[in-house]
Length: 126
Image (cartoon, rainbow, N blue to C red; front, side, top):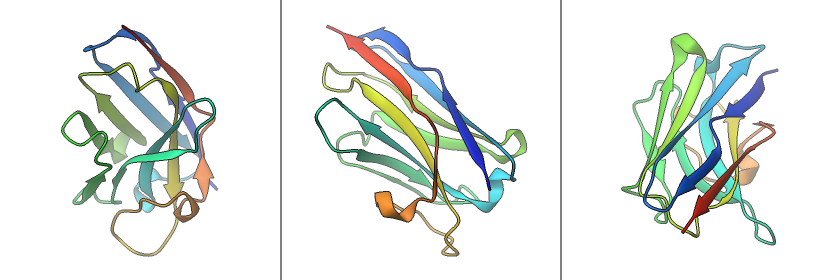
């Protein structure tokens, strides 16, 4: 079983950038496809991005395509979410997630993921 810990959240001005990290322990991260999600108060958890085990495939929600970039460094057991051009509607708790599904591609459904981090808060000031 893998444990996930997010970091890198904080307060940023609109138009600014943040890079979130998700570090895994307990298992080698390369055996999992990974995803990033977010949840704002009163809203459902929203898919943002996914990356395959070998990083040969990525997939983004339309809401973040062109602004956010998911990447991974399997040697460091870490997945990243680079967030640029942050907007006033981006604030939320951001979660990383791992799936042990055998398919070697990417996943966008909440139910596709088996392991979740505790989340990191992102706040955007206008």
